[in-house]
Length: 305
DNA sequence: GTGATTTGACCCCA
DNA sequence: TGGGGTCAAATCAC
Image (tube, rainbow, N blue to C red):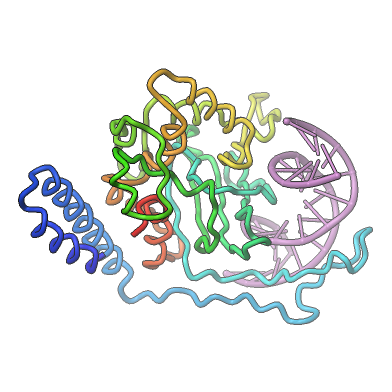
């Protein structure tokens, strides 16, 4: 980030004749400075506590599962990994742009709601080790406590939001850029509110459509007969509900395909960088700077820097 | 047919 | 020893 800030400062010098370009560079510098300050604060908070070393050993015979109808086929490495990067945050929208696959759900002691376990869809095809755990907050059923374990090493197309180009001249900025919309405002319409430990990224109507599309994994009668529900993984790539929501959003006047996919980015990217860094520490306080990179991955995908 | 979800069983580890 | 994390067969959805 420091290097980026230096380069942006150089760019600002070169663009001093263009007020608009200078203003944009100002915004870049401001965002970078905020991110650096946030990283510093995080590092200071973590001072003195070392991150956990990753232990993913899978020794022969270790963690063998006893035959349960399937014999030794079910034997697998069950040694619990101690992950180097763990981030827990409380959010309203569980959608993060990555493709997740649910692999388990557990009732948690002293919690009203079960915890759902997700792994990256590309765990096997791209050896991506990212995991996510989602649990509805007891005190605020509208919010979800999401724990990210590990970082994405995959290149998920669904997570790469396209960039809106205003003119063909902008193509030189990067070969991965995709031109969609003629309307630049579509990429900037988002607001962020942060209340206490809860970071809520409220986006515009297309994101509301995504949020509304969250469907319960399971409806069951809880204590007292009320219905409890657990949110499913919502992924642009894997969820038909999400796809439907995105289709609906695409039909919204003023929005085009570019708007739909970049809407995911709107929730997390751009000026929201500093706000995204309002993490809650896990119980064990695990956190490292790799997490910042993970959280900011949306911009990596679209900004091509 | 393929991929995602559900869910009971298994196992690690505090 | 039990809570929590993971596996994988069965089932579901498209």
